[in-house]
Length: 302
Image (cartoon, rainbow, N blue to C red; front, side, top):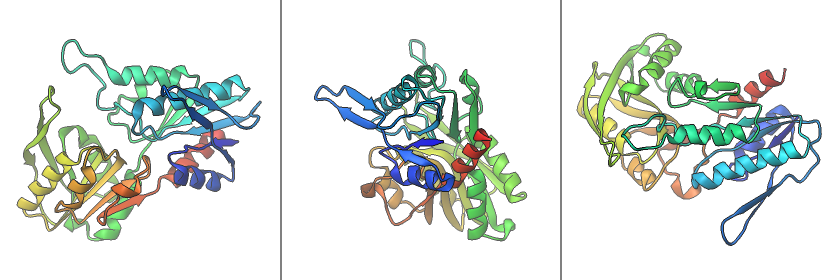
């Protein structure tokens, strides 16, 4: 077994390889002056099963090409099977046509990723339940929710003082799964309105009773504006404290500054996407998904 690490996420790459006691290599990536790229695999991989880790973060287009080129290089150089470990897939929220005349970006990205020759994919917390079904290759769909549940219990052992919150209607399924892991707790769902032309979102109202410590559960934090609106709604509604849990820290624009200045006690994310040092802040805590991925790879390999 060989792990091809992500040069942009070395910490996660090496942690996974260490837990698997597997050989880790990194692709040699050359970017030319015209921004075209060349990828080379530095060792012989004939007959090997290879796991390629790639966190597809900004710049997204470059990351997708690097993944595709890496897979193609492995296959052309004799790898037996290549499995993609892709914790975060971009465009997950663009899984259908919102307005007439638009493309469906997620379909295009999926075709590019699986078209490179991957045998299977391991992903973490896709935005919707239908995303794994959009692939024509096997998808191993993992979740950070058990990790979040454990951390929530550490923060508040008394389930009567826990309110779990979905920041939108699309997260209700995620909330129900977490509720099972926590053994039954209070739930609140926030409704929001989105302008599909500008992409702007505003919190409209919420359903349920706000009480005790509130834990917002989401899959993605991008600009941070929506989650901060949700935090303020909960605080104004009487929440004792507010914590945020999100799997994928996209942290676009000035998200770090917005989150740092929010009324949240703590923001928990995973290392599905590496958070650069200049985007880290005092309220942020990064939970590693390396155990989760390593266990999944062991099952796939058995």
